[in-house]
Amino acid sequence: MKKFTKFLVTIIFSFFLINISFSANDENIYDKIDLFSEVLDKINNEYVEEINQNKIMDSAINGVLQSLDPYSGYMSPEIFKEMQTETSGKFGGLGIEVGMEYGVVKVISPMDNSPAERVGVKAGDYIVKINDIQVQGKSLTEAVEIMRGPVGSNIEITVRRVGVKKAITFNITREIIEIKSVKSKIIDKNVGYIRLTSFNENSSKQVKEKIKEFKKDENVEKYILDLRNNPGGLLSQAIKISDFFLDNGEIVSTKSRKIRENRKWFAKKGDLVDGETLVVLINYGSASASEIVAGALQDHKRAILIGESSFGKGSVQSIIPLENNGAIRLTISKYYLPSGKSISEVGVTPDIEIAESSDEFRINTETDNQLDFAVKLLNG
Image (cartoon, rainbow, N blue to C red):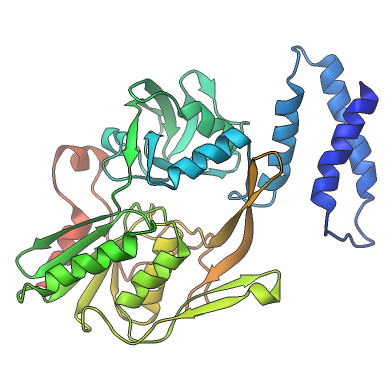
C-alpha cells in the first residue's frame, strides 16, 4: 500500500512540476513528495473511517490549485460537464455565482429573479452550512456539488453576513435557471434603462438592439446601464459593450507571466448613444466583466458611476481540459483599467456612493435607492 501511495503522489506532483523551475533557495521538492506520501499513508492506515482514494487525490489536486488564488481550481469530469452545460445559458440550481475566500464559500452575486435572490441571499454572504453539512474545510467544487440537485427539490443554506450577528437560514427550491442577460424600459419618458445581468455570448447583440429601440423614441436622451449583481462572463462581451459608449481610447489590458500574452483592447470610433449622458449602477455583486465596463467608462469620464464599490475580481481564468475529461480552472493574467489600475481585490469605486435599501425593505417594496437617485440626478 505504501509503495502504491507513493507512486500515486509522485504522479500528482509530476503533473504540477511540468515546465516549472525551482530556485536554489527552494526546498527539495522531492522531499515534499516523500512527506506528502507519508501523510497520505498515515491517513490510509490510521483515519477513523475508510477513505476514498480517488476523492483524496482529487482534493489534493484542488488544494494545490486553490492555494494559488480563490479562482483557480480542479473540476472533476462530472463538474466539468456541468460547467459546460451552464455556459449554454440554461441549468438547474439556486442561481448564485460563488467563490472561495479564507476557506469559506462566498456569494459573489445572486442572479436576478433567481430562487436565491428572491429569498434574500446577497452578494458578500458567506455560506457556512448546506442542509446539515458544514461547508468550511470543503473545496468550492465540493460545495457546489452539494448545492446542486433535482429541479423542484428543496435545500437549506445558512449564511453569515457582515454586520449581522446571527446566522441567517434560507430555504430554497431548486429551479431551472435561464439566463436572460438584458432587460430594458423607459423611465420618466426620457431615460433609457438597460439592465445587464451577465456577459453571455449574445449580450452585446441584445444591448445593441435595446439602444436602437430607445433611439427610435425621440424623447429618450439619457441612459442608465445597470450592472448591479452582475458576476461577469465573457471578456469579449465586456469589450464590445464598453465600445458602444466610447469613441476611442483603451478599454482594458491584460498582463500575464508570458509577455507574448499581454494584450490591450481599444474602442473603435462611433458612440452608439451619440455622447448622451450615461449613468452606470454598480454594487458589491458587480464583478469581473462588469468591473471592466464600469472602470473603462469611468476612466474615460464617459459615465457617472453610482452605487457601491464593486467586488474586485480582476483576473482572467482559462479552462484547461485534462486527459481524464476533467479540467483545471487556472488564472493566467490580470485585468488593468485604462488608468493602469488593477481591479484585483480593490474593485471599482463609484463616483457617488449610495447604499442599497435594507433587505426587508427591498424585498417587500419596489423601492430602489440607487436607481431612484440616478433618475433624479439625470432629470435634475
